[in-house]
Image 1: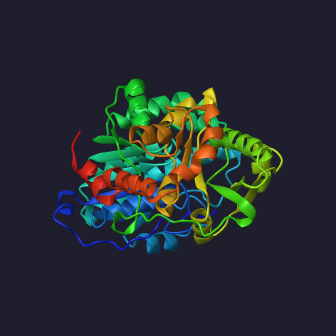
Image 2: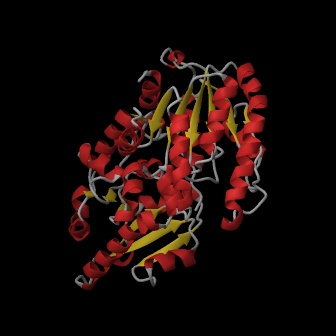
Image 3: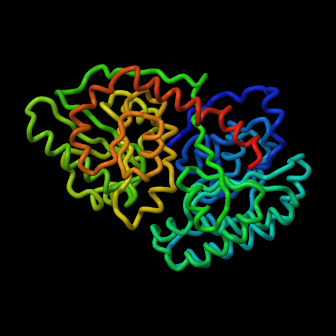
Length: 414
């Protein structure tokens, strides 16, 4: 599946923007206006929000399919690339060696790029981190060679992410790297409140929550009423990856859909999974295709149209204990794509999970924080299928996720 942020024209500098110093924006996931997902989209949206304060972008190719020209043309800002081994497949057997070599190359190049950062007029560095813990060492190298204050924005808990991806031996190193880098950063931002609390407990570091930006023209959300439901079957859409963080919630929904459908001869539900995860992996995670369909790597505008015609958009987290830290600290980047659709969001997960917590604290519908609650939610979806639900989403967008809200947070000193 190809995720693409909703593009907006860069606004002229305002008096409020003048309070933001020129920024060199670092990211390990190259910002992409199209053809990306996760941190590719997040970094692009952040750069869009911070323009015209961003004087330079520092990144890498990351994948052999991503060209330097594609990144440069997308952001429209001077972009400097440090070398990587993107042409070499990331097989697990060589992943550790590859990461060490890439980090060494990046650190060697940092002094050269820091001269260009200085020439760009940047007064500080903003580093947006993905799930690669080695990027911490790259950030530290740029901090030393630039002699500029640095802000670090953390998106994933590195240790939990390493374990989830099959690299538990990295956890001890990550603890040391976090201490080494984060304690020397001028400011540390996190993608969720839970992540800030986690780092406070883990390293005694004061962090500030920086919500993900959501780019919508004039911050206006419009309620969209589906034209009809084919054959009386209402579609619930899921938009994103299928992995252990979410598959538990998806399986619970499928169980409840099956139960609901067996008791109703006319009104039924089905789940449509729009994903870039390979179908074979989806089936392995979820079981046989009963009450769900897979739409693999669909174009983003097709996904948006489908979501507009759905009964609700499903945003789950798992209740499984091994993933508790990840569930509490991560925040789904697809929230930026699903909120503007104008349809009810069905948020599901434990109360400590980042998105359910955000919904509960802001009285947003529809939010289920008990494993037994999804069945009741299916029966009451129509109660929240109205403009009032979308108006509440809009107020939340303005308060937390709008460009001005993001800028206001970055202007403040901790």
